[in-house]
Length: 102
Image (cartoon, rainbow, N blue to C red):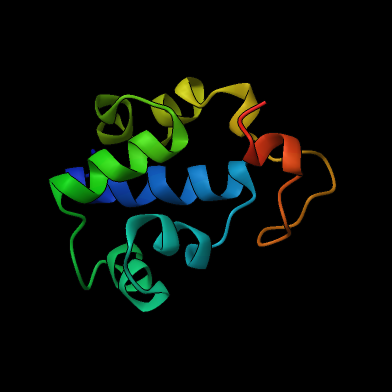
């Protein structure tokens, strides 16, 4: 059975968070919402809005259609510069060079 659009978005967001080594708290700060709101969206008790999807896609440097397509397409589109460096744990500070966009 195919995943629903909501399941594809939740799976894609989870994959992107993991690949980038970011926490829900970090993503929430970017989106201007609380970590609890991200958690509700990820658990399925609340839905990701199209505006949220656009913001998530922009944050990770991918097209919103890649996000909506699901985790495989989102991961294929994720720029190498956005991927976590080996040994970096989720929530750990990002190197200054990455923060500056270098």
